[in-house]
Length: 141
Image (tube, rainbow, N blue to C red; front, side):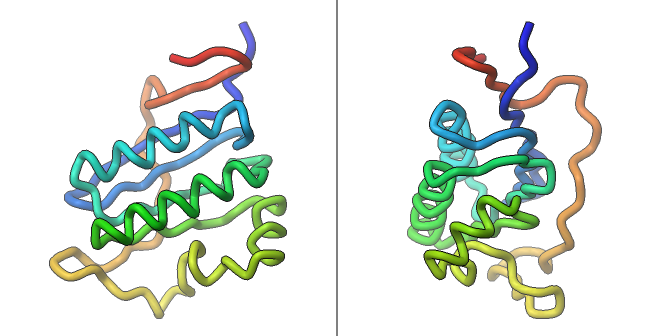
């Protein structure tokens, strides 16, 4: 059995979610990413922090998914912020000038959303026995 190419963990706290991604974001796995980010909004989440520390690759389809999710979140009066992007995504952000739109601001410059607790540093989610979503080559669960 092949290892999952993208694993998505979600940890909610009130109207805030931490999405932790592990693996690769590309044409094959981006539909799962889009669905997970859209599910946050449909569940009433208005602040979404995306931890990309364990993402090894992200192509332009992933970048577009993050742009679209940012637009949808902003229209719902929310915030989506990326944390620790991999070098491939950093390069796309640099080339497009989109870093200020998608990346989290430096610590000390975080502003909290009205009615929410102050923005915490991104913390890894608690250990789970199973991931929220896992996708392998040609495999959707």
